[in-house]
Length: 483
Image 1 (cartoon, rainbow, N blue to C red):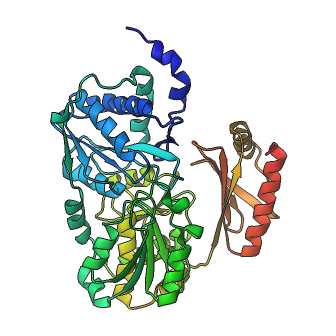
Image 2 (image 1 turned 135 degrees about the vertical axis):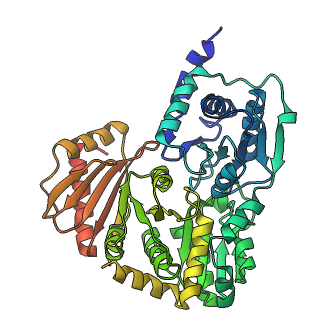
């Protein structure tokens, strides 16, 4: 058999790397139809070892340029390989296709999305039948399969094995079982919703109206350029939402990222809440208002106020590496009250082990409805309950792979004895390098696996201390190599 294609495309194959949540690339550069066919065949090779072909494979996509065409290409490859394929009838939120992967007893789902990345990017992730992110063991197998498959077009298009379906009804039915619709209806909340041209349009607005909210929406249509911005629900992307909340004295502003697995929350004052604050509010809401219990799970980059909260309420606390796949894995192992990450993903007890921005937004609305208090007050009470405040900050440094490796090596084997005059008492290596300081602050250095970035996270008990630590860390990193 001629294997010449392996040599010709070796550089392209080398670009296909699965990060914390699938493979992403730039459309028409490395994210091409040929590479989509290759990755689909690599996923299919894994499916052969895990499922029978009596179970369908689901395929879904977000609102990006050519996403529906990439999804159709994958469906045709899978159909040629003997799988029956169900493809969504429109762009679809990641948590929605994840739920359907379990509900339909499937062999899993292929989701075409680059989440919150800029418009030139697309991506593909495989979601197993348990409705959460694929574990590293699964993605490692898929990556290993890539060198053994071809990128050619199917010889025959088996349309008889491909059908479309609407994933919305069953997901909404399930979502409505998790929230108190009558409580929210009784509160008659005034809500502003910015879809950010994402897959949540037609979902989150439908749920809000079903729950009796007075609603104004923005950007609830497909724009593959995302209005010239990014489908990321924070900062400059939410200026219109903030202005609308303030102008009309609304109770709440809501948004999601591109594939709707991350949330964005604006309180009644127009302040954009950090994911850490939302996690605290919802953990407290689930315990005090809904009488739920279970473990709290957070990533290594997420606030330790959750640790204080867990200790106060006598709950187990688990720390995971960055990536919701690790939280999802813990949710499948034990009873988890809430699991979340500082980047804006969470799930709760009774839900699928996948982050869900639609659910997160509705839970915040539910918390307001239960208490009758403004969201800013709920945040203040939750932070005080967890013995806060603490202050979080992140610096993104654009560095070469060699420089990133040198920094991790240096801080691992020769860590500083003090940072900004504060003693380093412990060095953790769960994900990157985490420096625990004597007075409770921490610093995490974590190189991106897919971008030329070193992310430096920190949490302190004062803004002055945060500034001093940030300056000191950049000085130390600058000494290790040029950037």
